[in-house]
Every structure is written in structure tokens, then in C-alpha cells.
Length: 211
Ligand SMILES: C[S@@+](CC[C@H](N)C(=O)[O-])C[C@H]1O[C@@H](n2cnc3c(N)ncnc32)[C@H](O)[C@@H]1O
Image (tube, rainbow, N blue to C red; front, side):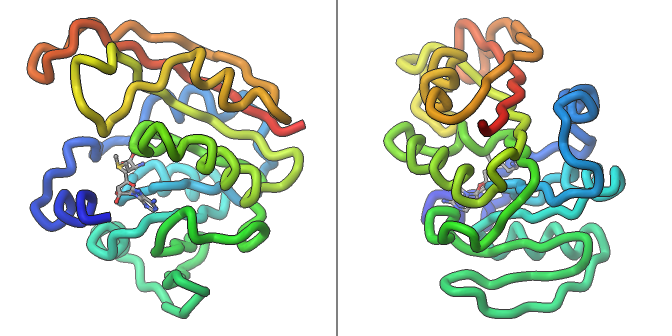
């Protein structure tokens, strides 16, 4: 938690984009998310992708534990939210958005029952040892037939300490091997990232459906 607080307080938020994610806009329509359903956006930061999902007719439930991030999302998009306590979380509600401010791992099964989920720069922000718990939370907080769109980032892990942590296609297939159907929609070769000392970077887009 200290790490992410520090990143927000010092505005070291290089992951944030001022445009919609092109892989979201390209692939979302084909994954079979229920029209008008609820989309879970774990580790949402102040992502504009939540606005795109809302404009596309979904209700959007973000999960984020840094208050600065939640306030930035609300203020920068001129949203006024009502706040209430929800277990260990603060729930910010301004339809069609709900943001649960707190640790994603503190939410209990069925606190949320979303129809779909969207993960960009979320699973790759989670330490490797917590990935199984993260997948469990995706299962706990979505409906039995929920579908997700996952965008990964992979590089030789020994070349950099995360976050972002490298998440390979094999990691994804293994992590979602129990109770999910995993389909890779696109693989992108991003070349190297010399400024971070990475010799080879790839990104993949997955459709992941509960069965
Ligand atoms: C790399 S950023 C990505 C944000 C967003 N997905 C985007 O694409 O802009 C990861 C975010 O997750 C939040 N975060 C990290 N661990 C979390 C946790 N366990 N529970 C809730 N939020 C968390 C951080 O504060 C940070 O805003």
C-alpha cells in the first residue's frame, strides 16, 4: 500500500493514459459482455477506460485503494459522488459508477456480482505471490458466466523489478486453468524498452470466460 500511496502522492503515475485504451475499444464488442451489465474494473486508478465503458452503456464498478486516485477520477471528470462505509471500504457512488476504495483482497465473495471485468495494468501490478488470490477475487466478485478482457505485459523478469511484473501467456493459461475458458485475441510485439532496460516486451489480449 505504501508504494502505491507514494506513487499517487508524488504523481509518478506513468501508467495513466489520457486516451481510451485502443485494445479495449477494439476487442470489447466481441467478447460477449452482457449489454448494459455491470463491469468490474479492479485496480482502476483514474482510468478513462471507465468512462468509455460507461458511455458504452455499462455500469462500472472500480476497485482502488488510494484515495488520491479516486478523488482525481471524480474531480477530473466532474463527478459528484455520495460516500458510504462498506466494510473496510469507502463506497463512492455516482451512477453509473461505483468505486470501492479499499484493498481488493478485503472484499468478500458476493460483495459485488459483476457481469464482466476489464483488467489493464491491474494483474501486472499485483505481486506474483498474490496472483492466485487475485484470480480468486475475480471469481468471487463476478457472476458464474462472467467474461473478462485481460491485457498483459511480458518481459524477461530478471531485467527489472516490478511493478509492472511480467505476465506471460503461459502464466495466464495456468492461472485461469480452473473454471475458465481462455482465448488469446491478439499478441503484440512491443520491441524493446531501452529506457527501462528491457530487451523484449510483448503484450497479449485475452478473452476469459467463466464456465
Ligand atoms: C498500475 S496502476 C493501473 C491503474 C489502471 N488500471 C490504469 O490502467 O490506469 C495500479 C493501480 O492499482 C492500485 N492498487 C494496487 N494494489 C491494489 C489493491 N490491492 N487494492 C486496490 N487497489 C490497488 C494502485 O493504487 C494503482 O492505482
